[in-house]
Length: 225
Ligand SMILES: [Mg+2]
Ligand SMILES: [Zn+2]
Image (tube, rainbow, N blue to C red; front, side, top):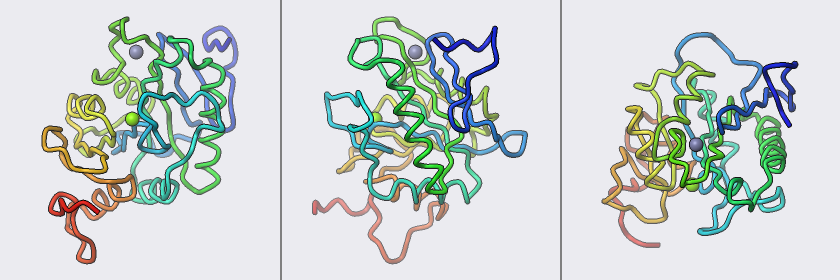
């Protein structure tokens, strides 16, 4: 059991781990410069690791980092963004995933990213059951607020990247620009932009929305491949 208030906070690698009001948080000890900073909020499953619809990641062996993700995260850091993972993990209250296993998976994955030069600043997980009607389960924006309490965020310069409409709505509620990741564009999703992968989304963020000359832009190219 992890308790923060009445004892020294436990540290896992470079992070303070805390559970408060149903939110599991990993906050990097080295927080960088103080003050408001732009951030990229990242959904986890389907954005940084492979997501199989209807299935949960319940152990580390099932956590498959998607191609190009460490490099994409590294590019965002170098461009001055904080990296904040925000993820609903209803598998915990539903009994498919032990909370300590989620902590272990997160610990290992954050270390892998750090070793690849792509330090993630924080990871925040809603552990509520969908029936609980909490304020942090996306599409509600509470998880982004909790993250911003830990890492003061200039939302007007920030982005959210997710592969579900709930992610996009949570980002939009905080007035972030949003990028929807999907194999095919979906005009019904109210995202600022759409892309096929984190790498492609990051290219768009860093190019400051200037079209690349050597690659077809996702929104213009609707050809299936
Ligand atoms: Mg997802
Ligand atoms: Zn919640």
